[in-house]
Amino acid sequence: MLGRAGKPSTIRPPWAKEESQFVELCSRCDKCIEACEERILVRADGGFPAIDFSQGECTFCEKCVEVCPDGAFVAVKGSAPFSHKIKIESDCIVFKGVVCMVCRDQCEPRAISFTPVVGGLSPPILESDSCNGCGACIAPCPAKAIKVISD
Ligand code: SF4
Ligand code: SF4
Ligand code: SF4
Image (cartoon, rainbow, N blue to C red):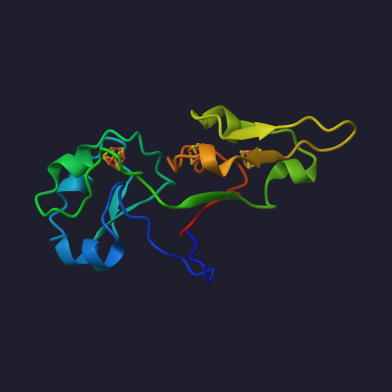
């Protein structure tokens, strides 16, 4: 994940409170990490939980939120799980003339599409408003061209 300055930053679990509140409240008990059946939560810097989308996607099962004893999450109802955005970079193999639609096939909300271009490449188009930040497109991309952008 890249921050605004292009530096790596950390992806907290879905519905995590704002960063300064989160690290204040989270006691690093590992309960959310253990509860995640997708195994995408890892112990990151300082022992705080973070998402590793190279391991899989978030299914929004809410288990991490439910087991937290420290109030480090916002209420699920009425809140967006993630504020990050997804970006498809120019490493995408379609730009090298290879046919690939792996990301589109992984995307449940259908946020990625390919518009046929006569005699040319059909690059992936990401509709950010439809993307829920689940990360399902990230690990399967053969070019590792899909990145998370922090807000
Ligand atoms: S919502 Fe479920 S899948 Fe997503 S990080 Fe939490 S426990 Fe894991
Ligand atoms: S999966 Fe990766 S390489 Fe394939 S079309 Fe999507 S961004 Fe490009
Ligand atoms: S992160 Fe966004 S673009 Fe990628 S699969 Fe999930 S909803 Fe689709």
